Amino acid sequence: MASTLFFFMTAEDEKAFLRALEARQLEVYPETFVAAYKPFVASEENASLLVEEAYYLHVPAAGELVGRQLRRGPRSGMLEVDEVGSPVIYYARSLEENGELRSGRVWSELETMGDKMHRQFKSTLLRHAFEDMRTYFKKRFVRSEPTGFFIGPVAARRVKEGLVLREAGRKGGL
Image (cartoon, rainbow, N blue to C red):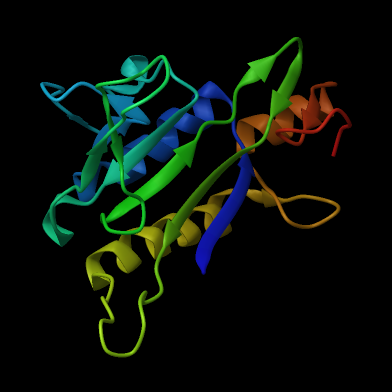
């Protein structure tokens, strides 16, 4: 089962989050990419390179990235990441749309997979990277009412000024 953290963060909160991730040297991959794609390190300096809604954060010390080629659709020929077989953390960004801040999430498959005879274990480095994110959110972010979301410090300040928080994929607010 996947481990998931839901959050709201502004661009300033995202830069601080990426600054905290710099020590892990996580490589950033888009959801689909060409074979010649060169990943960049998740850091505050590279925050401007994040233009898509979601990315994969690869832990290079934990193992190789496993990708598969798309055979159909508009992105035919591009590669996509195998989330279960790769040491990656999925990062769906929290973006502002029409004066509302949409929720984001990080998730990763941290548990063992497969039957008892062919069980593959996830790297402890991946687990530690995810736990670092959880610890970062618990220390620096505010918990939402109702519970379930972490709200970044700048986002929490802007909520008091009237910013509306909206759960991703839903029409209503939080």
